[in-house]
Length: 409
Image (cartoon, rainbow, N blue to C red; front, side, top):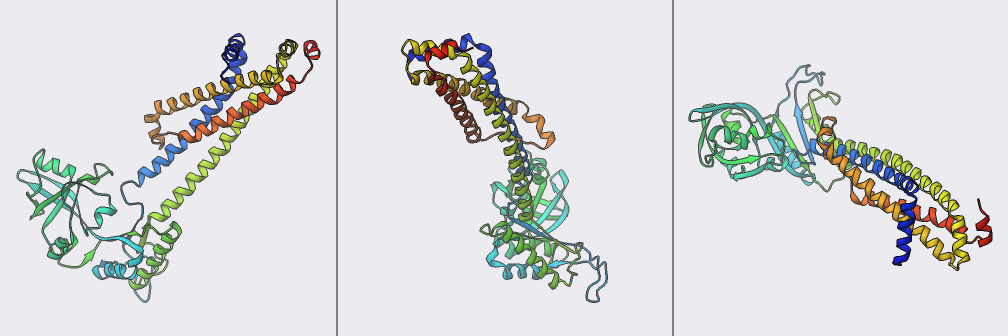
């Protein structure tokens, strides 16, 4: 393996037969290149799906209500369904073991001002668990806590862009801002991976909003983070059961999708997971075909190469060369060409994915990349195939008697 003379002879053989060597390497390089590009594109699609849902927790489900579209139990169509604190408590008590986080929401649009600066922003009145369901990142201060809820405190957490609008580079924590005519103390500033729209939101305790905006116990939504120990199928079943129970409790027709719906991330995750798996199977199928074509190409070329060198092998044997040395030099040459070509194909594929990265985002392909382990595995497969493709005909050629080899055409 480390015989310097043998390696020198291999390089001389490659340099004298450039076209043959290039054709052998091209088959391998093209197979690895195509394999890399296919897997990179599928990984990019998978990253896009993950990015779409990155703003919220992966185990979130949201209860939304509106007007009825079907009569039920003598109640007319068009009846407005309203969630209340008792519905929130029902969900909390009934499904406690299946819930990791739970919050209600009261949604409003408000005008917020500080000194001479003002603008309109989205306000959500929530429970403390909302921080984890929305993946809110506290940059300064703190989030709403249970004491704020109990005391109906007039406190508010503002987004990073709200802070920039109202305070610029100055501190915001502890300052009082005017929210639609009522003074609130800023207790926190947050950022959010969801982007600018999310960072122009504000949060306050749900109990405070209910007291100030209507003096009632109305809720806009109930948002649940189901127990992450649940499988996707168990989480879907949980969401379906909760929907049936809430329909019964709120006197809603079982088929009235307008009046009540539950958006369950488990269903979305299962659908996306199935789609991505299907894509991977397609790519594996196509990639395997590419690799097989590469293997066949290597085999055909090596058969031709060995047939071309039959007289050379006869001379070697006549001069006393062992069959193993003849087989060894052919196999080493094949493995060397295959390895270099595989590396070039992998490098070129990685470079192309990196070069077209930004342009692919318009086609919903984000950060296309490929796992090194997968491509290295494919390359090793081709190298082993090259080894076998060289070994079998070389072994046969090495057994030929020198006089027969010297007469070969």
